[in-house]
Amino acid sequence: MLLKPIRDDLLYGAEQSALDVARGLDKLGVKVHIAQWTPSPLPVKSERVGLLGVRFSGRSGLLKLTCSILHAIGETKADSVYAYADCFEVTMVPAFLASLLTHRKFVLCIPDDALKETDVLSLPQVFARWHASGHSIRSSFRFTFYHATRRLAVRTTAISLVSAGSVEGYARTVLRARKVYVIPLGLDQMWFGRTSTRMKYDAIYVGGLWGYKNVDVLISAWRQVIDFKADARLLILGEGGARPQLQNLAENLGISRSIDFIPYVPNASDVHDLLSESRIFAFASVWEGWGRAVTEAMATGLPCVLSDIPIFRELYSKTAVLVPPTDPKLFADAILGLLGDESKYDQLSREGQNLVRGFTWDSVARRMLTAIQEN
Image 1: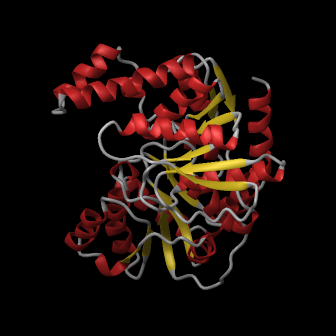
Image 2: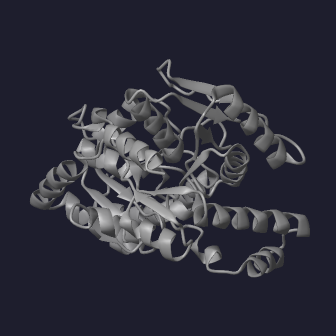
Image 3: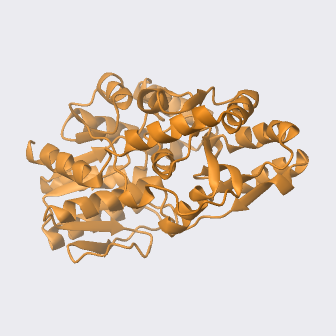
């Protein structure tokens, strides 16, 4: 059983990856139920992947959700519960509690080290810092309870899945996870190759519009790009709370006509078409667990200019240009350098495709099933 968190009805990278894992397990003959408390029309396309609705509302929401998951476990006779993002309180906490109460295996995905700053604190320090930041006593207790539950889970029963070595080190040393398996993410073969020869955009960003994604750095960099290439165009594809500020930034810099903002696109083939019409993929995020959008861009054939963060350094240091995530000038220089160097452009395009060709969801599902069966 997989659990989908509350993030409206959009499929972001984590949600889409969970769905792809479900499809991979389905191919292995495993019956999967996806429990979700947002009514998303998930494209499951399989009789062995079922959708369950669970209740979550009002006061005592976590308790109600835990009870709903307990009922779902009994109804489906699930022998494992998979919460695929440890950072989602309403996924991780009820899933762990329900697995304890029913003696089911608990599988937890730890996608990144975004909570590391809090994880190094003692629980009293967690409470004190959260309360000092302006939250109520009730909210501070809940936040501390979430971290206490998460730590208990990974140090006792949880089968912890991570996507890369840098996250494994964090899980073992900071979280002190007891059972950790490194399972790289997959990639659908539909992403390989371009669907168009028309180059409409000089660079493209695909992802959520949230603060940590640093899209403002790309927009500031674009101001410098068009100083050297006046007709350069940037596509920002995605949805999120930072959209108004980013659009205002483009207006204030006087470059709004050089940047297209396109909201969330649900159809993967349409995203592939937009990637195919772009020359370079640019991504300035300050932390990621894998970078699903990066692998999709590489498969399409786009050279990538990425933030120099541990996960990208581990995975893509030989197939992308890495830049400090807060420096617009260096991003601009890297983009202009690739646009002006055909040899390096072709080399990164070719090497990126070769790297990601080995990432398959079938492999992910097999390794995940092995981890569950070994415990």
